[in-house]
Image (cartoon, rainbow, N blue to C red; front, side, top):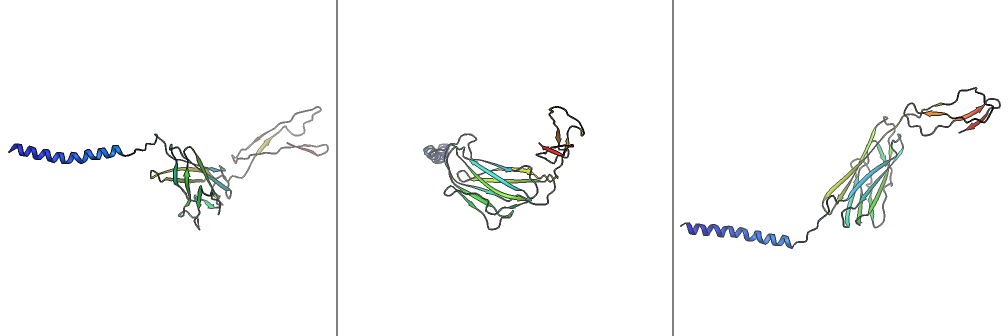
Length: 221
């Protein structure tokens, strides 16, 4: 009785091994596509200016780069209007035959801006831009963050990058120290002064003028 049982088990096992062996042969016969380690599409995003004043225009730049080692097609980039801003109609860029921009009739946080990239060769990049206006009024130091998403139809992955800028609503202020008034100079003299921004408001330029009291003539520097 033991021998038939042994034969029965052998035939049952062989029935499992045969399909597995066939599957292994099929796998070996299939072409294998290997991407290098870390080789994936890259998306980067930036915003200017930073800081931004209430009511100012913000330009967002999105760059997609193909680092996969092969051509890509049907890439999709999506973005939403960031909080505390208003989209500037018609500011999405496009390029005939290469980059298609889809702007919804009404751009709100629930509606997406979409770019479709038809094809992108290995090592190449493509740039997308759009503009918004910062709301007014806004509290000084308010962050404005915005994230762009890239979908790669080749491997069903999503990639993203976020740009964050801050609102500066401090009024310009400065204090300027120069040589003391009512000093007399009887020869050629070089005058210099120091300008400071004591409030941290971001003053970019200070104009200094010198007045000659004898005839009220001014020199600007």
